Image 1 (cartoon, one colour):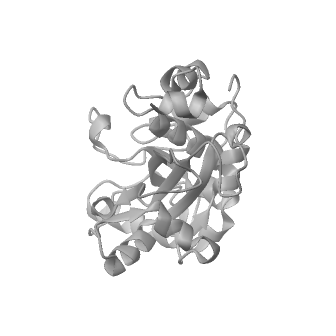
Image 2 (cartoon, rainbow, N blue to C red; image 1 turned 90 degrees about the vertical axis):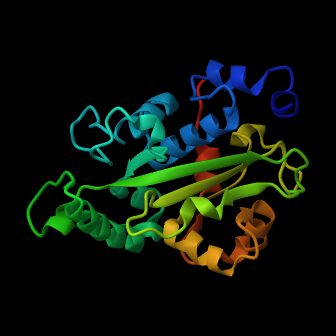
Length: 249
C-alpha cells in the first residue's frame, strides 16, 4: 500500500489530511501534488490557503477581487471542469521565467478564444484588450508514485488523450509529479516532500510529443531520459515543489 511504503506507520491519506492538505480518499498523492503545485506557483500564507484559492478562482474571484474566474459559464459544474488549478500568469512567470514567452502568447490566444465564445475575460488597466487580460493559467496536475525508485518502472505520467489539440485547449499547463521514497542517487526524499521529479509542460509541448509517440501514454522513464535536455515548453520545477514548507508534515 502507498501508505505503508511512503509514510511508514501512517496511511498516506491520514498523514496528508493531518497536515491540512487536499486529499481525495482514493487519490492522496493527487491531492498532495495539487497542493504543492498551488503553493509553489502562487504562494499564499499556507499550503492549504494556496490550494483553496487556486481552486476557487476557476469559477469565481479571489478575496481581493483581482483574479478570476478562469472559466465563465461553468458555475455549478466545478467537478466536471477538468481543470485542477487556476493560477495567475504573472505569478507563474515569476516562479518559472522561462514560461514568459508562452504566457504572452497564451494570454492573447485565450482572450481571442473567450471573446469569440461570448465569455470575455476579466480585464484591468489601459491599452489593447489582449494586453490588459489579467488572465489565469488553467493547470492540470497529474501525480504518480514510484514504488521501486530509483527505478521508474513503467509508471505513466499522463495519457496523451488528455492533451490532444482542440480549437481552444481546456488546459494551458500540465504539472507532472513523480513521488518516491528516494531518488536516483538514493537520497531520502522525506524532507523534499517526497518529490522525485516534477515538470511543467505546456499543452503545445505535450501535443508535439504525442505526434512522435509510439503509444498513447507518456511514461516517466521517457521524461527522465530527456531530463538534461527537456523539449521546448517543458521545464523542471522539482526544486519549487520540494521547497514548499508544509506545516505539520
